[in-house]
Amino acid sequence: MALYLIAFNDEWAPELTSEELRERGAAGMALIEEMTHAGVFVFGDGGLDASTVVCSVDPSSGSPVFTDGPFTETKEHLGGFTVVDVLDDTAARYWAGRIAVAVGWPQEVHRFPARMA
Image (cartoon, rainbow, N blue to C red):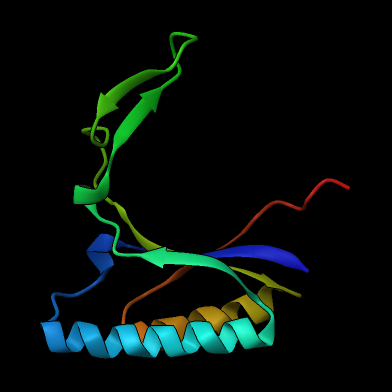
C-alpha cells in the first residue's frame, strides 16, 4: 500500500451558489463514507483558501522567522485535500476521478515517497 495526496488549488474551484456548495458537499461526504468503508481513506479536509493562512515560516537564517499570511509570491492556495492509502497509481487515479466528479473541479494526485522500513 502507498499513500497518495489528492488535492486541489482554491483557484480551481468555481464560484458556486450556497445550494450548489451544499449539493457538492453532500456528494463529497458520501464519497468519503464510501472510501472509509473501502479502507482507503486516511484523512481529508477542505475549505482552505488565502483567508485561512495562519503564517509563513522562513528557516533561511537558521532559526524560524514567522510572518503573518502567505508569501507574497504565492499565487495558488491549497483548497482541500484527501490522503488515501491504496495499492498503486491506478487505484489513486480511480479515487481522484471519483472526487473530481463528486465536487466538480480538477484534482491533482501526488504519491508520497516510499516509507522507510
